[in-house]
Length: 405
Image (cartoon, rainbow, N blue to C red):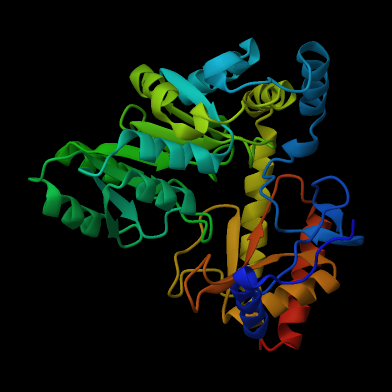
């Protein structure tokens, strides 16, 4: 039977909107990785230096993680066959959650299918329409969606503006309902770090729940990559910690850490947990092995930060706007090159790919209008010669396009 290609009138508006994206220059096609996620790899058949991956520590190809995945498949099969609350909780799932809880210095942990579902499922489960959420304006989309699903009243505070967060809290302190302060630990588009100690002070002053999404801090900040809670030494002051298994850990999934009561409640009320099949044994074993690597191979995080400092410094010396001028200043391996115009940014990204550098352009609606950027991410496995070649290419293409003088 031939594939249907005609546009049905009911969905014609989607075609029109895609055509509008093309006119604006922000339309894109998925770039397909042909081989392993490494600093040098092949996208759509072309060898490139990869500056776009969240594979901070190179764990996607670590031999210990590969071995763990293979052994778990041999022992447990390829899938759990059910959701966690019916017949899909395997011993290996509990082993991972117990290991993560010890690693994060909390009572308990539950693993979700992704970081997105961990955030959205938790916020929407613990709050209702009579409650209030005080949220940083640059929080991740999964937090925003979870807040909307909860039907709680949402009060947004200016990015990292603790005084404004307190104004928002104070405005509802006498109203019934729970109050939740929520922030990213590391903000994914600018690479800056949330003001956790001051926000914890606010939570304690007003009796609010404190929640941190530590996706881009997991494996990057704190002792052995324990995240921003450890980085700032605010253990016991953050009620809900969300982490990811999809970035520095090298696999897929998200997790929530906190009190035993919190985790037991999420077992009963977090809809992504209740209605999604659990992780395959291979993925679960991979994540267990990754935590072992974090604790036993500290040189990986040290190398990540050595590379980050070098690359960030060199980008600045070339004259790129890497934040701090009308945008937050990066403090982590995420370093944006702020261009501003969405079309120019996407064109820059496409030209870089032609020249052998994979650096993703990000424009509205992911970031605000006028704040489009190339987001670069450094990893522990980038070699100095790869960084230097990428820097030379970035500068040459930027000058050719009038981005640099």
